[in-house]
Length: 450
Image (cartoon, rainbow, N blue to C red; front, side):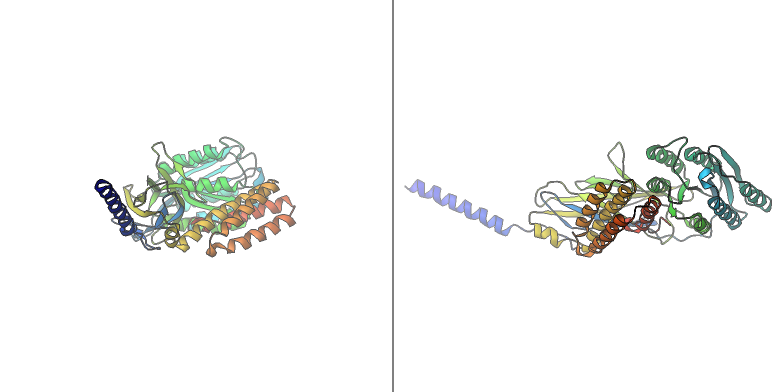
């Protein structure tokens, strides 16, 4: 009897101790929503702001917003070396070629005697005016070469890019290749993967590549990908008449961009980046995930949104994500800035919701929803109305996940009406291209496109 009482008493004590342990167990420390992690020690400042500071032990999907800013000043205007790679295929005949000539003439006049220029015209064949300083004599020669341009042949995008690359290899100024085309490649390399790989080699050689598409027949997704991999600007121009202004803006950008070969690399520690809406996320053989960013200009922030997943974990664990921005100065020196953030793992879903930064979350939801909207426009353009409708439904549901993103539902509804009323193929193309241009800012590319 006494032995039984002792055993029961011991069990009761242990039970009480367990209850007390649970009752007194401290809650995980959760950072306040809106807290920002900031890098130190480099001219490029990187800020990381997660949409949540707590994740559920069974996993949570969240977003992170990175703002990359070059804080150093520009020490005078830098000389530039440009290669204008201009599509003169048969589809450029008429007003498009005339507008392109005017824009090229204007570009020549904007350059000074410290600058260099090469001109590559491409159809099936390539015509090249070699890289030269823009002196009064060479300026006249460039104007004559531009006047002689004729539209003919197919679209050898890769051959022209290689020719522009070759012309810039011995350039002395800040090097920039301006690729202008109104169509899709029909000669040479044809796939987005092949062409992006070529542009990647050009960019790795410290040459910035800008891709400008003219008219509604361009492959907008391809041109956007080439610009991103090339570290330059993307532009969709509904007509070639806007090219003169855009090339002028490119000269300004080339003179002020002093941080080049900019890469944002993620080093996963539990948290894993699964998508960067509107950007190409490259996964390297060592598992690192890399985004290529446009050249940085002083005090002009670049914003990047990424979608992140947390794995299953134990309560009281903490999950983190480290990011590195690497870049090269004008002199070629490699530099880097590191930033990381950590989130708490909790078992109460209400703690996850309470930790949410609504501003970042809504921007993330909006970016993913806009991707669906763009995909719907592409499906509609190629005649797949069922796929377009499904994507619009998905986009509408996504926008409904955040009160701050609800305006996206109205745009989905307006787009649906536009789809139902328009049957003109040319109108579909123009609408899809215009939507691509409009959505650049939704992906944090407001300073990377025209």
